[in-house]
Image (cartoon, rainbow, N blue to C red; front, side, top):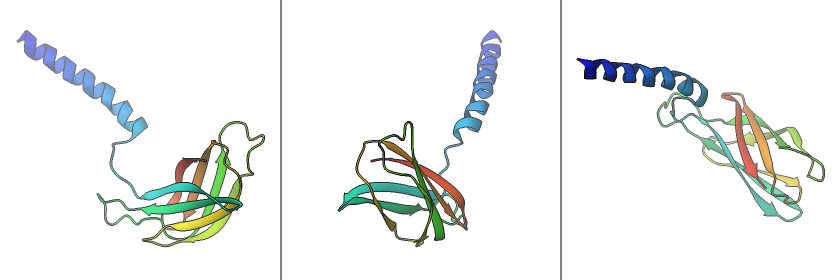
Length: 128
């Protein structure tokens, strides 16, 4: 009986710990969103925005349509390329969008927000 009581207490403690962790980190299900990568290009940077589908929920659409792109550098912006705010572009449903910006590589981390009409803001980061 004591072993059963101890196991019940341990289970309750694990559940009490898991609830806030799940709220903060999420349940781990795949969601529709975007990913980005940056590559050097003549005189600047090519940024490719890739739509991501949610394989667990086929009714949830991947970002597509006329979207806006915003990128800002993390930390001190001194000596870094200028940020981009609300740059409009078209994101196809099944193909990446290509954006070019005059820039130079700094090894900095950039916060990218892509806002599309059917999904709302999507966030990602890229180092370039």
